[in-house]
Image (cartoon, rainbow, N blue to C red; front, side, top):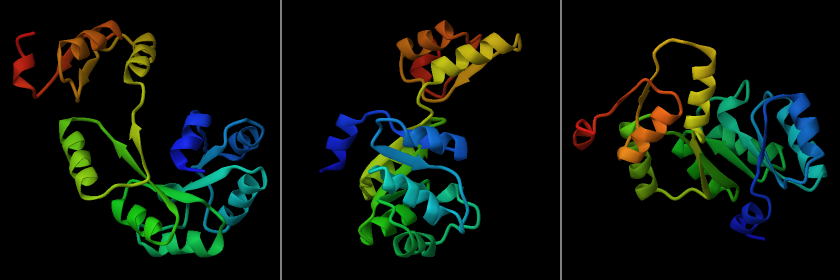
Length: 186
């Protein structure tokens, strides 16, 4: 089955950051688990537990204690686990995973227009199997922060039009900052 079919059939992916989360994820109907914790010694067993439940296992190699930013980490995953793929913010690691027959997910933090442009360049040069874009729900987070503080909040980054600005204000922003000059007069 293709990854897009799996995502369509199981659109909510369980991302686990600790043992308790893993235990819960193993009981869900989600067919995909993003493993965001563990260490070089425990990751083979964590992956095996996921695989034993018939789920796809993706190891976020940037978050595993004892791993480095070198391609050998991907080779370790391939040789010592039954993971289906990896996730990383490092394109070279994702490319190497795909060369080795693993699925590769590139994680991108889109915090401003510079990060967005860098991501576009990466995608033009290289096509991972999937890309995880973060953050996924800024307006919601903004509302939560607004509920916790009276500090002035400024929304910045990725404002592309008036509706973006209005959404930021509706979420509780006191002001917005943008490098997009055509929005300065909105």
